[in-house]
Length: 88
Image (cartoon, helix red, strand yellow):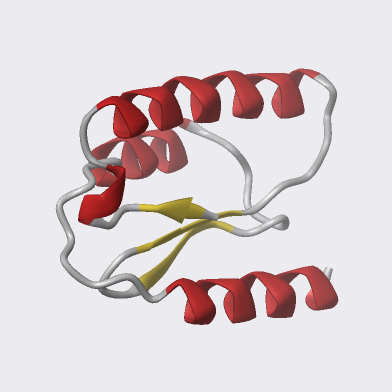
């Protein structure tokens, strides 16, 4: 669950991108299923556990990792994450 609100801009944004890249690489290498959600003004499911981590998912994630959104729907994002984990 990745926060794309303005509160994450700058150093926090750069650190988040680095951490996400390393975490996803490790999960893929260990063959661990995972989901990726982003939130700011809205919640977006980038990848569910059932989806493959491929070039399309990677491009979608990288194109959305810009912390420029004014609102933060953090509670909605957590609810989405809980629903995804219950369905897997």
